[in-house]
Structure formats: structure tokens, C-alpha cells
Image 1 (cartoon, one colour):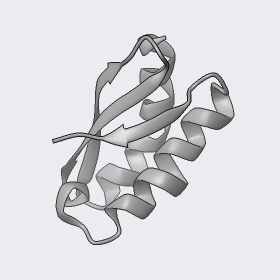
Image 2 (cartoon, rainbow, N blue to C red):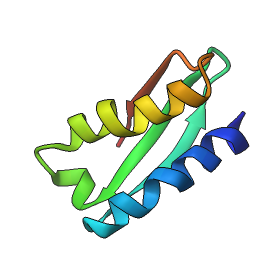
Image 3 (cartoon, rainbow, N blue to C red):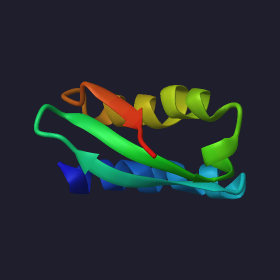
Length: 74
């Protein structure tokens, strides 16, 4: 499952990098919760939660409907 999630993150990563940020996959839990760490400008941007919800989470859940949630960790 981690490989599938990483492949999706690789698709959204160029847009994040263009804005000075990035995303790191931390874990995929046994109950299908994806944990990511926002990096660079994405870690401190006021729009980070929108990026997480409307960009990263949406992309992952569209491709992998079995994923229950995507959460940011420190």
C-alpha cells in the first residue's frame, strides 16, 4: 500500500515543489490512515490544510478509495 500511496504523492509533488514545499510519506497504518509530513513552505503556509485536504487527500482517496483518511504529522 505504501508504494501505491508514494506513486500518487509523486504525481502531486511537482506542484508542491513549484511553490517551495514538498510532502513526505510517514506511514500507512493497518487501518488505512495515511500519515504525511508537509515540508518547506507547505509546512508553514496558512493554506497548508487546504492543500492537504483538497490536493493530497483528494488525489489519494480518488485513486485508493480504501484509504480512510490522510493526516499531517510533525
